Every structure is written in structure tokens, then in C-alpha cells.
Image 1 (cartoon, one colour):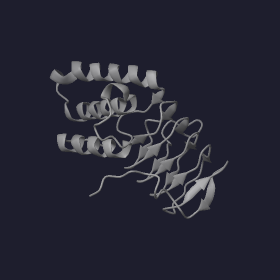
Image 2 (cartoon, one colour):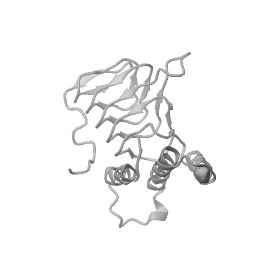
Image 3 (cartoon, one colour):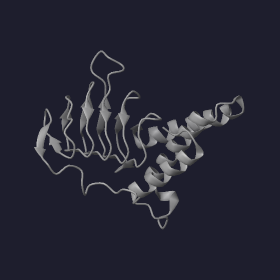
Image 4 (cartoon, one colour):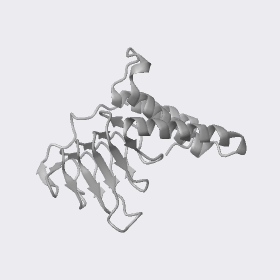
Length: 189
């Protein structure tokens, strides 16, 4: 969660690197990068600027965020994703506001991260360096370990605590020991 201006800048840099943006591409044509910048700005102002002076600006940011979310098909609440978020394509992505996703997550279109039926707070907890393939569905009170690659159209309804594996299928099961290595772009430290 972004708590300081320094956190805000580090999240922005990690997101830029994860998306592979070098600054050479025209900003006006890059809707995903605009969306991620707006998400991080909203998180910063929502978490750090609590005075009444900032309320109108925060409301304006929320309105802009809502409009862009509808335009791109994203339902991504604030303060869910860690630094290094990489949205691969424009398209439907639905994330529950009780979900928790670690750093360096690459997420594709038609992904749903939701709760168990009849529960509003039992959402997945996803570790660092996770790749989520197109059409994957993750739901329930589950935990996904670090370095896991989730295959396309997988239905993940149980926890996977072994790190650095690949899972796929309906329901998801372990298919290899490869993990997300090579599928993510991360910031060099």
C-alpha cells in the first residue's frame, strides 16, 4: 500500500518497468499506462492526503478513474496490487476489493479474482511474481505462493503453497515446476 510520496514514486517506477515502458512511445496512445498511473495517483491521494483540502481533488480522481475503468473494462479497486503491476491487454478484468496481490504481477484479460459464493470478504491472497494467464478465475479463501504461473482459462479454487510452479486446468492442479520465471519483467535492484 502506498503510504508516502517515496512509495508512490517506487510503485510508479516498478509499474513502468513491468509494462516495459521506456518513454519512447507516445503517451497519448498508451491507455494501460495511463490507467496504471491514475490508479497509483488515486491510491496516493486516498491514503496520504486525508485533509478536507484534498477531498475535491480525490473525488475528481475517483471520477476519472471510474470513467477510465469503464472505458477499458477494468474493475480493479485501489490498494489491491503491489508494485510492478503489468496489465497485458485492454479487456475485462474483475478484482474483488478484499483480494491481496503482491509485487510484480502480470495479469491478462478476462481474469476474475473474486470471493466464495455467499461471502463478501473471503478473497484470494496472491504472492509476489505471479503470472495470471488469460481467462483465469481465482475465487474463495485461497492463497497463491510466490512465483506461480497460472495457465489460461484455469479455475483456481484451492490454495497452492508450493512456490515457483505452474498450475492450470479446471480445477487447477500443478502441471510443472517452471513457475513464472521468464514471464515477468522486473526492476533490477
